[in-house]
Image (cartoon, rainbow, N blue to C red; front, side, top):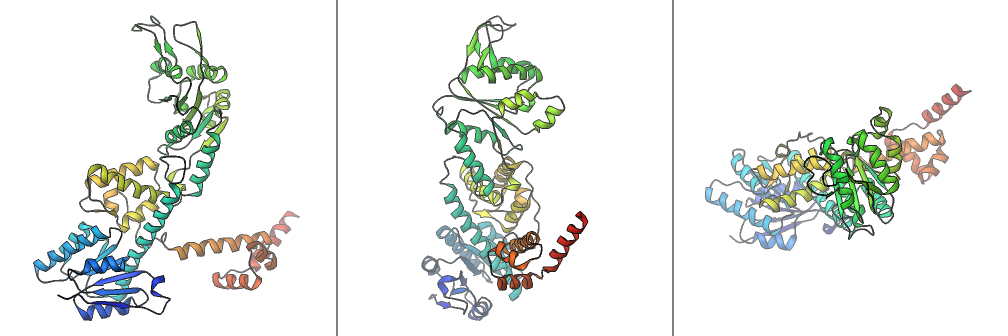
Length: 478
């Protein structure tokens, strides 16, 4: 069949400024109907033939609306093969498989091959528009995350993926502290990557060519922790057949990382205090003082202030190990990082297990963005790993992740809504500070009074209430 290619340009700006939609369908009436529905997009149309790949290569569509409807099984299989070839050629392109109402099996096969979504005819303009524009939003989000990944790739701290303000501030702190000799205390919930940061501190320091020794104080029984830390002399106790150096001595010249320091028994806290103060140890059963040249980094997910108040942790040790305190934000407070990390892990796990995983389904993206992540990055990594291993299709869904889909009404992808919320908050704060004085509020916002009037009308905010509130508060205080 000879391929026919058509282009449609809407009135809203030049085609080059708009998103590109490719409609693949043999039905000319259907193509005409779809062109009218998406007249505001840069629409290209083609029949389904061997020339489609050339069309995709030439036009680089963001989204492809692929009509798989066919009464012939052989033609349906050819369409699925073509869909697979399109994704091999342009893996970032989002494909929506369109089928007849009884073509659910065909739609499922298409999604299994990597289609982003599917739609059953007959055409409902409003519903189909939602499906297509959702695919565009996903494409836009992935492009933005790609740009952010490039930016984050310039960070000097290897292994840390994040573009949120919280993580950028954290990385700057690490870079400042690393070259110093300061003893560092890292605080953060379980799974936030405290050891990763400790290794970064070591790697960016002048001790980077010396040993980095990590000890998990919670993983070693109390009876063995002392010998693990300090070592012992031959004959110090039953079974001590030879002198054995402890982890602190083995780390001399480099860095020792004491993870879960909040779990250290009280009897050892006093001995550790001496190590921090004097940088010397005595092996168990020995009488010789051994000098140490090491940097000490500690970490815990416990509330040390509460432990000190309860008598479970020495206050003097706390002040010694916290010359610099670094707090690691939980994943739920790292805006935008969750999805970025998920996509990185998805690609990594797919390569590791040899799985043809292409991306995250819309419900998976919504679920990742709204889940609280009590286990932080460790939980996210485990869920992604399990999903890659067990997923039946090339696209990971919320169900594969074991997460609840928050629903279509989630608005985290809607930039207009986000901007509107920030705008309202800024106007309200400025009016509160200015006590309803419009000139002062406009000055604080950096806009003119007419612009402020427009904002008040747009968001239906009454400036008078802020003046009244200020007067009421002033009256109460007199």
